Length: 232
Image 1 (cartoon, rainbow, N blue to C red):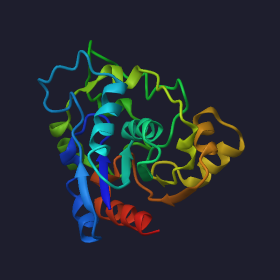
Image 2: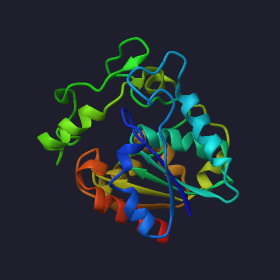
Image 3: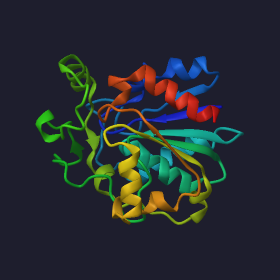
């Protein structure tokens, strides 16, 4: 299948470089994306919002004749969900990597410190201990060296959704920093952060215990897990 890889904040297509070979070995055609404004540190991010990123991925989806798989990491999962809403009949499955679908009007994260149109990678102290599991000093240096400021409006724009056929698209949640049993508990408690997830008709959960960036900390296992989800 054609598999579109959508990176999370501060990352471009190269962030999937250790994951892509595992998917190609499983027989898939893999398309890692660099979203608008993430091309370089000098890119103009002043007019880029969440809809810009969703529309950019929709354009890629429309270039294929058959339904595709979307893989979204972190904030890229919100972009993927917007694409599912825009093209529910063109998406065979969504794989959320330490992320999940968000509800109408929600934002990705409006607590991160912004600098005008830019949202730079914060210092590590700004992240929780769960985020940083397995992200050793070497990986932190690598991450910071490759990080590009995120367009700040992508983090703060509310998502707009309108097609309930999005709930018919099967999804896989790869749970990293929080185990899937906690997601089940939050759904049972009607927690706001999982209300959209609770409406999806077919959900598979896979635990991959590590921090928030498994493409760095456990790339082989992540690639194998995604490949297994597509085989199912």
